Length: 119
Image 1 (cartoon, rainbow, N blue to C red):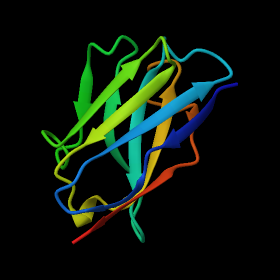
Image 2 (cartoon, helix red, strand yellow):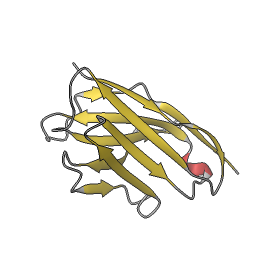
Image 3 (cartoon, one colour):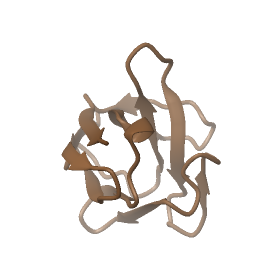
Image 4 (cartoon, one colour):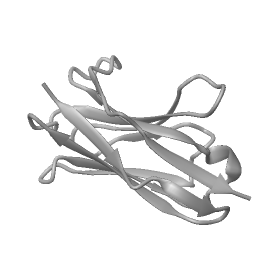
């Protein structure tokens, strides 16, 4: 079993930055694709970013391209989401997920971390 724990969320003013972390435990996730999703109040969970097991391939939602950067450190079993130029519409709970078989089915999820961007 894999446990994922997100951290780094908080309250930030518009234009500010945050870096989210997703620490995995239980087993290594170095062979897993990893993703970030988010869910704003009253909205469905939406895809934010994905990174391949090696870190060599990344994908982003159009809404965050050029603003967010996903990365990973397999030695630390941790995935990151650097969020810059934050906007109030980025306010959401951010979830980290693990895709063990690279089939776009997410086998493990964290509990989420709240990001609130004030205007």
